[in-house]
Length: 239
Image 1 (tube, rainbow, N blue to C red):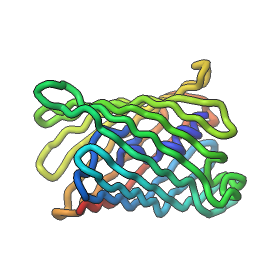
Image 2 (image 1 turned 90 degrees about the vertical axis):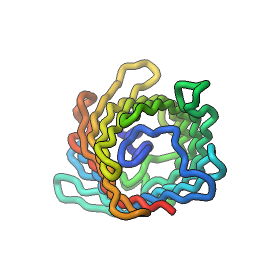
Image 3 (image 1 turned 60 degrees about the vertical axis):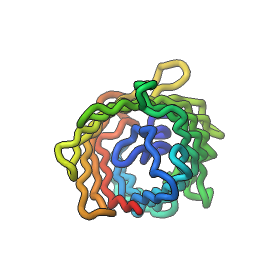
């Protein structure tokens, strides 16, 4: 269940798993091109490349499509490669942080699917369709932004499960930011819970290009499922 959530959510709000209510803006593009890695259950799952494409419709709506190729390398030497899960969604920020509101709030329904279906049988993707229904909240201080997300996931073949995340981002300068998060998952009976921690950064390289990345690990969870290590590194293109 925990691997299902981590796989379904990678990536949320790059470079972290927790997403925020922000959108690119009217007719603006945000494209994250990068790679991910997760070591769990005695195997490496590498996402390379991972393309996260976002388009702003007006001030409050974001369209998203995400695609990736995966490489699975097991400790005993077996290696396989192929397509991973694809993700499509629409984010709607229906409350802005203004004088009348202390928070920004959005909903972000998404559909995750896998093609070809053989990728799931080979362990390269989560089998069945996933429906994700999260809500995000955020408050911006002067240099610090704090945001959180909670959501529920329905899988075609697996029991439903939920996730939550709490993150913060601090701007050290106009071009460099540090961030961190706690991200967890739970099942309906709250019997198989897990929690992980991530540290991330964002470094602006040019007006339209930034280098973003994160690394972390599971804090607790089933030993055979919790990630021992996970990372994300990408170039963010905005125009």
